[in-house]
Amino acid sequence: MTQLINDTGFIPEDWPHGFCTQGAANDCLALDLASDADPADIDLNAGLQMIRIDFPSAADGRGFTIARALRLRGYTGRLRAHGHLIADQYAMARRAGFDEVEITAAIAARQPQDQWRARANWRDHNYQSRLRG
Image (cartoon, rainbow, N blue to C red; front, side, top):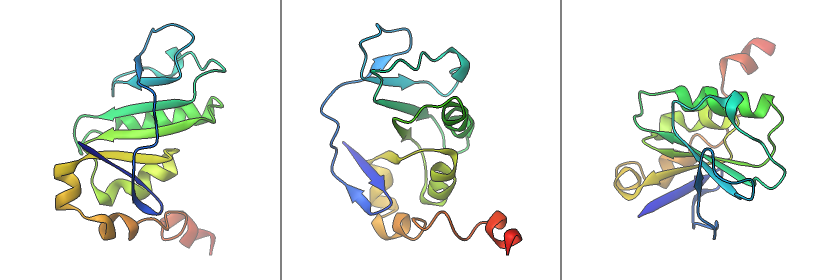
């Protein structure tokens, strides 16, 4: 069981389709990417609606880089961080381009909704906004 999180807090899963792996047919609606995927190799076809990027460890930040690179390449669909993320990483995930985070029920039990919602104001409270004054 997993828990989906966005800026409003814990939300129910609303994606009714499955996920394809990289290299799947062009009719894939959602792509599951490993943390070592090369964003330049991702075919951003018009039918692709969601990309889910794996975080095998909270200490592995490669998914943030992949998300940012996909957004810079022009991907506008849903981006979901999946795996071992903690509430402290939520603001970074949103700044990197993720729309939502998917965690295990065990992580959700250790870090309840209020801890995630405390970081939902991700556009503020960062060093860049403080520098801009």
